[in-house]
Image (cartoon, rainbow, N blue to C red; front, side, top):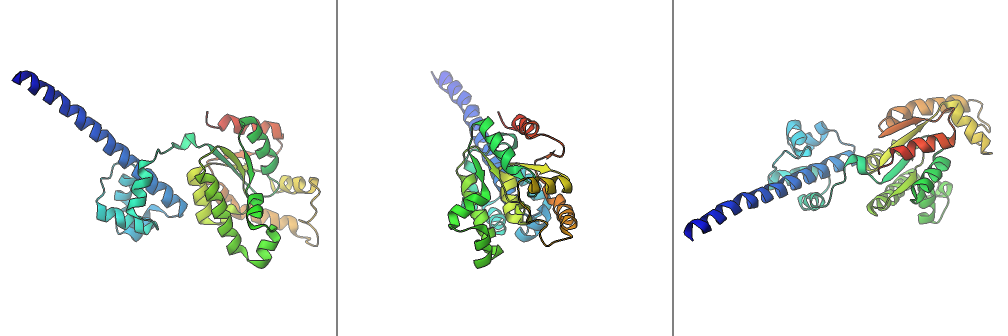
Length: 271
């Protein structure tokens, strides 16, 4: 009896130890993912966060990889640098962490005339998920037009609304296709939030393609009273290209039909 009890006891310990080890490993992986996502959302480099938190870049690399066994005090330092608390980071770490390839939200970015609305609506219909025009959602929230928002409250107010509306959409945790405003990439925090929690796709096009599409929609505002409008468009696209290139994927839509681009995006969607 004694030998039998000892044998059972010795056999149980490795299983318990392994289970506890697995839990710790999952917690560290989740913590690393939470830190990485929040750092990206805050548009912080590893070097910048390391300086703010008073830790080494090497330590942060290990932490984000799920390999850093961080102390409570050090966790609070990192959390404070990210504008949150250690308790909140641990709470996020305990939630299921989706892999990059399993993101259920597709966000289309690009200048006006990229085809975000027509392509986005078709992709959403093919996938059987809601389609959201982010600017339209902002208009409904504010109960005023975009031009009125800018006129009365200014750009900073619009940017905050854009971020808040987007965050609620992402926090809902439901599949969707989102068409964003062309300038969303110029707000580092909002662009970081979108990139960390959605599959972002830049719909590329030449300046001429952008121009022709806007005009074909009956919108002559781009050139009214602005003889250098095309040059302005070229400079705007050149200035934003490095930001658009940070998207998960880019698709050149110049010379392609809407159906062709839709097929390509559907093929990229998570199963």
